[in-house]
Length: 306
Image (cartoon, rainbow, N blue to C red):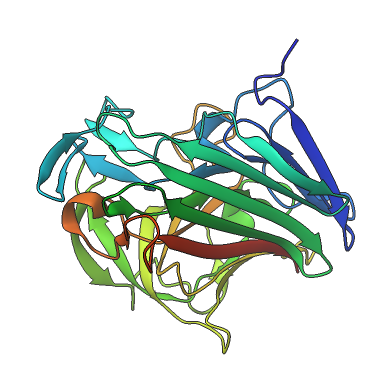
């Protein structure tokens, strides 16, 4: 028997424990001192609603799955047929291979082969590492093709900090601008969050606000990191997600329409590009042809208890 999530890779370090899985190199469990920091799922379950998955070679949506690059018009499978979009990349259901495992870290690799809609071969490497600073996730993409390749990266952890729903939690989100979207969740302008219910630059409760929103214009620390914090004022416990400067976008999702566990956790999704970047080109990474400068891209994010 093989679990739906495949082989399990358990690591521990600095008071943290995590379980990574073969399917999609996903994060199934993350806890600190026995306290869950993400809304995970059972070993015998699928990663419903993107839970803990890596999103490459694009996060979020590509309208109609159609885009042009390098003089070619390309068509991706519509993995979100209800809205007519290609959603969340090509690797989240793939079988990743363990490259190396230590008591506190595990690295997994996957070769994304050239295919209709994405005719480039790209090697993907993800390192999950635990320390006293929490979980650090580092993803490297290397172009193996003779031509330049479009690329973007995202991740889909659902943060938790105690009993849901999220309404009672406090949120700190240092973002000045949100992306406006149409009914297909595709970009349709931008808006300053100032004086709106989506301004969480000063910590305040989530309350009944519904989020499925990409944010940018992020305030960062001296190391170039942005950090989002959710905290349960009843216990004082909190969970933080940070992302490095390679991630100019964060998608937040309260999960109102999820079939189970709606509003029980807050997805905080670091993204290197906004929705529809394959069509707009905004913040899109262009991996140079194999063997030339710029054929590799590395980005890091992480989660810690606060």
